[in-house]
Image (cartoon, rainbow, N blue to C red; front, side, top):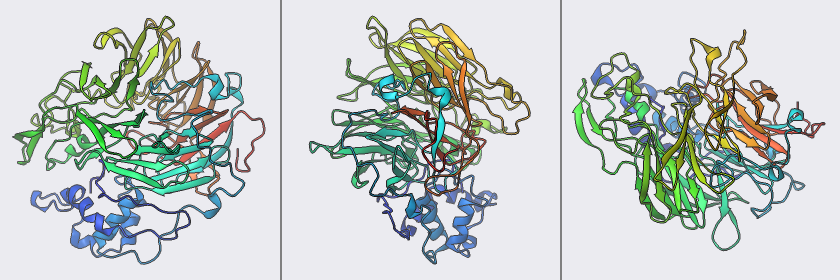
Length: 624
């Protein structure tokens, strides 16, 4: 089986109620999963390369044996991004048998909040970190009054509690804190509402596919209730009652079998703006895969009903047949230009901004590797700024026997805009859109002049797996930029942290990483999004170091090694590790951060959510 891309999992959301001791049967969904994503390897007899066991062999196994292989055995790496529900569906389908007994509930009842837990505050008032970037402009900056901590508090941060994601090999989504609750999800397809002070579980549900999208909390209709909005890796979007976890609606926003939602939906005045991405480019390592037909898009939904208002593709035309590769596989194109990042809203101009990725297959298109501005009301593209042209990249470009029909240029840089852009305002009222991508370059664009470049600055080396990957932060003076570059031949040269002037783009400081020394697991690059409060910027590294840097000069104020085992408030065995994708959340005097990342360059798997506070005495019996 090849598991590098998201999997289609049917049309019915699966909820695991609190206290259930068994899991529903999923075998009816397994046929679709197998056909679309497994058969290409398990039925490869015609090509003479059928090292993967065929259906007749798999049918002799029990579902428990297959699930063991997917979760703990030879297929663990390939299945790392799949949800628990998807793995169970495949195990029953491939074996042709139901599970013999009740599957254990991975969360003990003692992990759930008791009667004395804080009651739900049905309001957006008060300290909060909502969605991917705090605000609709995605600044990833929390002012003092809502951060609840100052630069003087940071050196005194202590671990207050830790939470373990059951069965996961990576941490969860960007922690979202609203009304005293932490809303978070993981690649297992589990969604949690936790108490921010103690980590106890108010509710949890399981959805179809893994979740990488941050959760956005906002009004649902005129009744005064709040909903949690998010997407999954099968391109489903959900609205969940924020108090109870009850499903309000669920819609699939893209029918392509490899479509996914990676960036967080953005909510404003009853509309939910959803970015659509895909991992199809990773499938092309198999010459029998008919690359490629996915095209990125942004979708606007009615937040009350989930009904689509508009959908705009980043590639206008559908893919058409092109050349055949050396084994006779029909190739198609154009494709790609996925939208990986959360939309940034410009309320003054009624525009939303997204970044796009590379093309997956020929021909190249004019909106790949671009910043694109769309009208919020209609979805019409108002302007675009392409920063890397003719960037056609897929997994076959890594092969020594690269075929030009599939990968025209082995040197295509794969310079996606995966990092969300930030709309900033200078002291005299001038606005700029700040964006960075995997090239290691940061740009300031003029929203009043069709994205004209105001300044640009190279902050470090770039590469297909490095540069600016997930997110920058900005205050009123500086832009804080992490660099995910890493060269395994020279670990000490990994990308560090930098700050550049907001008004002119000139370098202010650049702080390299400490030498690796004799550390065995050393990958000190900074792929994860960063977070700023007045005087401080927080950043995590791929080898598990969480650091706080002085905003003015880049001096390290505090450091914590998260790559360790943690006792947890929910009784699940947990350890920290690599830090990527989501960044720290600072709100209400606490810092929340995920630790552990098992894919896309992660070297230390883990499954921990960590909560810190500046209290001198830990309040949790499980604190360290």
